[in-house]
Image 1 (spheres, helix red, strand yellow):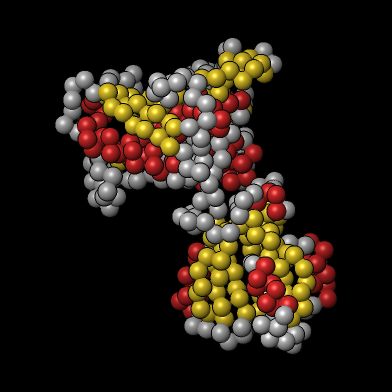
Image 2: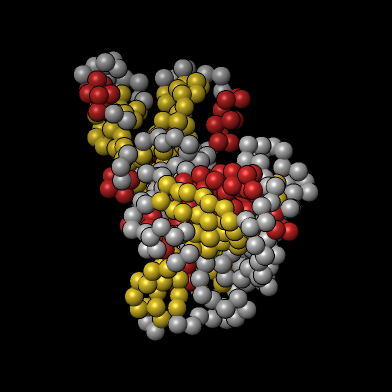
Length: 400
Ligand SMILES: [Zn+2]
C-alpha cells in the first residue's frame, strides 16, 4: 500500500510562492508514494531558509540505531523505520526536512500541473523536491565529503557504498546492481555532492538520474527511475509492483498465435509493420533481472509462424538440437524462479500445445485452463503443465 504523507511549510518571510511551493512538494511526495509501500505517515516539513550550498537539501529528521556493525554503529533513517514498521520514532514531530534557500526558490519552476511548460531558464521544482525526498528516504550518511571516510557511525546507505583506493566509489546493493548491470557509480568528483549522489559524468548510465550529483539542468523534469527504486529496495523499502515491466500481448489473426514482448520498441514496430497482429494490451507484468528471476527464452517456429517461450535451459537446448524449424531469438524477458518470489499477484501460466496446429498457448487463469481442458478452445490441446511464473498486470507500470 502506498505510504501516506503530510507536508507543512515554515516560511517566516511569507514568500509569494508559498502556495505553489507546497503544491510542488506534495506532487513530489505523491511521485514516491506512487511507487513505494509504507506504513505510518511521513510528515514532511519544508523550511524556506538559507542553506550552506545556497540551493536545497533534504534529510531525515531523526535516526534509529540498528546495532553494531564491526566497530561502527549502523544507523537507519527514521523515515525508513516508520515506513517499514509503522512506528514513528519521533512521534508527531516532522520526519523529513527539506530546506530551500530563498534565492534558489526564485530559480525554481513551481507548477505541478504543467510539465510541458518548464521554461529553459528555470529548474523544475518537482524534480528538486523528488530528489530531496530521496535523500530523506535514505540516500544520505556519515561519510566525510572530501575523504569518504567513516567515523563511529554508518547509515544503511553508507554500508552499501564501497570506496576504492583510486578515489572512486560505488553503491553495491543487490537490487541496484541487477538493474544497473554492475556496481553503481557514486559521485566522488564534486565539492558538495560526494558519496550521497550518483555518477561523475553525464555520459554514465546514472549520470542523468534524478539522484545524479553532476547537474540539474534547466527546463528538464527528472523522474524516479528503476535504479532509484532499486536503491530504495536495497535500503529496506518495498515497491508496490508499479516498477514491473508490461508484457504486451498481440494476437496474430493469420496464425492464431499470441505473441508477447516487453519491448516498447518491438511493440511499436509490430504495430507499424504487421497488420495481422492485433494488439491486446498488457497481459502480464515481468520483473527486472535479479537473483529471484530466471531468463525466458524465445523461439520463432517458422513451420507454424508462431512463437514459443520457455524458462527451461534443458528444453531450450533440446529444441536447438532436435527442432530445426525453431529459430532461437534469445532472452525475451524475465520470469520469477517460483511463485513465492513474485509475492502477491503471482501468476503461474499453464502451457498448452495443440497437436493439430502446432501452436502453444499460455493460460493466465484457472478458468481459462479449465475451459481449454474441456474443449472450449477446440480440439487438439494438450495441457503441458505450469510454465512461466509472472505477475498480474498492475496500474501505472513503467515501460521498459
Ligand atoms: Zn542531492
